Length: 105
Image (cartoon, rainbow, N blue to C red; front, side):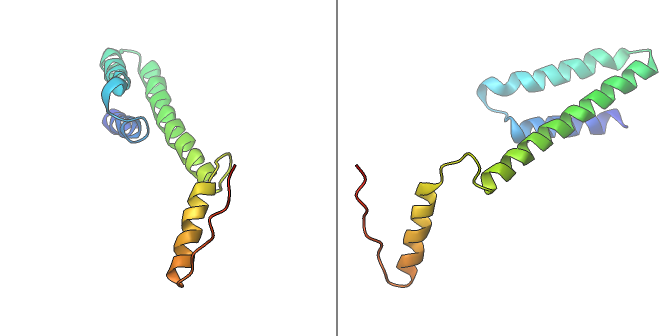
């Protein structure tokens, strides 16, 4: 594993899934600080282990967010009644109909 590619992939995953804005910059700062601190390790096995750990964190971040996207796409644990109502209204309007307004107490 190359250090530069693992570092770039980890920063890319953090930017994509966690964000860059405002109070989330400390994630990027921590990653940069850890890579700089461990760049001078003389023990090759320890350096390899830390690099593997960083690669595993990247994989974890990507996997957790992919799993979350799948849950949302399968409508698990999400109330999508408003979205469905909009879709049904658009479908009805496309053929010239209007859905009745239902009474909601």
